[in-house]
Length: 156
Image 1 (cartoon, one colour):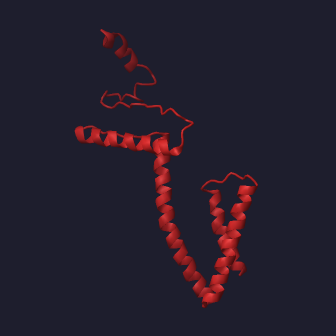
Image 2 (image 1 turned 90 degrees about the horizontal axis):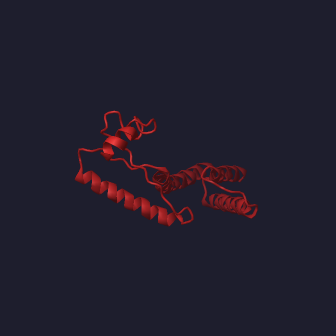
């Protein structure tokens, strides 16, 4: 009785029909709101990790269903993980390419060490000024480090 009274009415609602519930009624989106905006990122990471475990268990139990976990916090946590991994890989690669380039230019260790010291001081001063001036930095503004490295090595 409840399904006939409310179910058909809900299924025909414009927000649900073809959006959260597919036209063939085989796909349903389940929306969850994460509360606790004041909690830190560690709690969100733990919550997303637990949600991923629940989804993995559901996928194993129901292999014939397509189960997707998504949302702002899931995407945010995933993007942080990707950035962490990429920073690790590309920072090591960039370090070796910088050393190789400096060797090709200077061809001696002493000028290379001097240029590296100047670059490190320039980076520390630049990032220190951004903190001292209260400039909010993001992943994009952190790319100024690359510019500072290039300019300081070029000046040397």
